[in-house]
Length: 189
Picture 1 (tube, one colour):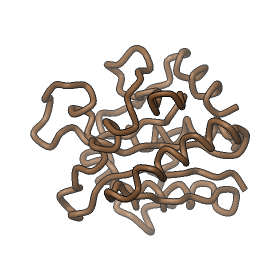
Picture 2 (cartoon, helix red, strand yellow):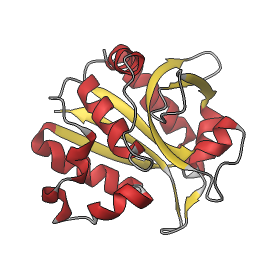
Picture 3 (cartoon, helix red, strand yellow):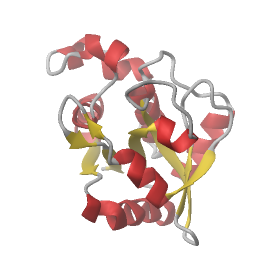
Picture 4 (cartoon, helix red, strand yellow):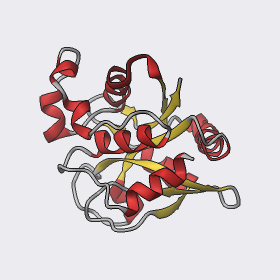
């Protein structure tokens, strides 16, 4: 049960180790929750990945969504399929569907979202909106509410957000790419 596994690890204090490693921390938590062998967030920053991506930069700038997708596939090779979804206006229903399916088919899939944290928390901490990753840890169909197990060290408890609010926070473009943020659907093979 990925949602329960995510919440259990979260309750034990699983959080990102460095300021910009929310992506690897979220992916490590979500992949473990769907039953893959535990890998530390540093696996997403390893020298093996450096061959393909600039992992040295991830500690200071974070990871773009496509980098998070590729590194996860490299960390787990043929044991995972990663589907990258962008927050284009027509994809809101896809977000709800992916999260709902993760809640129903709870043995083989998890969702990790990439969003501007300042929009969700309602304060401005950084000029760029504080781009951030967190795994989804719950879903309520009524109101289309999503529970985020935010891996930010300053956040003590998971929090609920509507799918529409989360989607709006994902639509903020990554300035380096000009494309919206989005989410990763992780499928255990």
